[in-house]
Length: 134
Image (cartoon, rainbow, N blue to C red; front, side):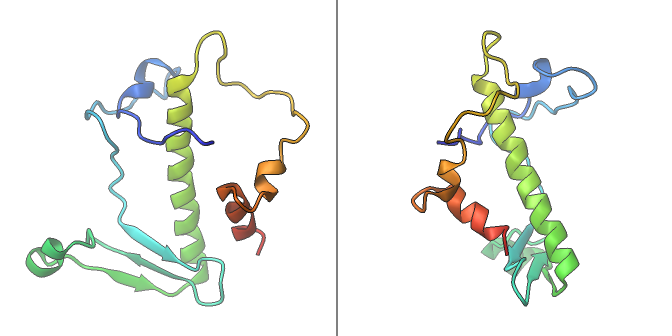
């Protein structure tokens, strides 16, 4: 299974070399201020919703938040890549949390069967593989 993606803000601060130590120390949780929803980025009519809206009732009725719709393949692909970049970043942080000096995070030699999970229809990796082959 995949490691959990919730890691304290400043977790990497002492675990990576400069110049990558510029993490904020904001406590537990995540700081992702991006506000966007990507719909069907690899289909015939992709759309991205983005703006100041938190997609919550308070902001919509009292704060004057805005939400724009972008019906453009290039924009939707760009936002989809950004969403994956964020997920990969937090997966890396979660993996670093369990790494030890005895077994640091390094590339390892391929083992037989490494791709099986990507073709197992019960595994979420299979859906991820199929999403990107269109």
